[in-house]
Length: 189
Ligand SMILES: [Zn+2]
Image 1 (cartoon, rainbow, N blue to C red):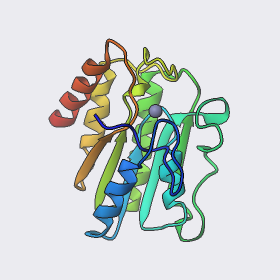
Image 2 (cartoon, helix red, strand yellow):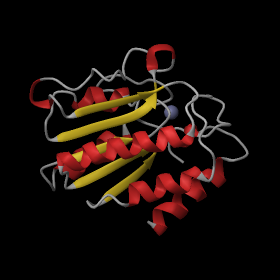
Image 3 (spheres, protein in one colour):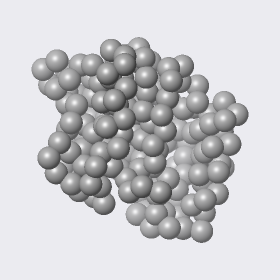
Image 4 (spheres, protein in one colour):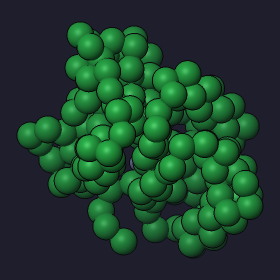
């Protein structure tokens, strides 16, 4: 399993991340198509991904995460960060209250997917974080193992070709069950 990448910016590492795998994937895809979207459903805001594409209108970035006011990465991830210049409107943040349950989280993912579809990308990169689980040691959200099935179904409904990349997800006895549940939903959807 590679380390996560979404906290790594254009010229900085951070949050266990050295290389932004999702940004690399999106950049390679962008050579083939004109519009790419990155949807980040990890527990944490994908601040590196946001930073890399913040001024660009051809790569949309969206993230659902715990409100960073009092949670890593602290300085980025507010709903008012929407991009600048040509990137204005091509960045969407949906911060959630600390401890939110799976229903709240899945509703926010659905909202993010609606916004992504509005952008009409020709390819999508999913930054998947398994650290949304209720027993993850980073303790931010309360998503149950069975709810990973619904997450997989939601993301599999995206119509453009999609790459799924793993971001966070830290040791709990449920980690492999969570990934299996996600894949079950993803393959079924
Ligand atoms: Zn994370």
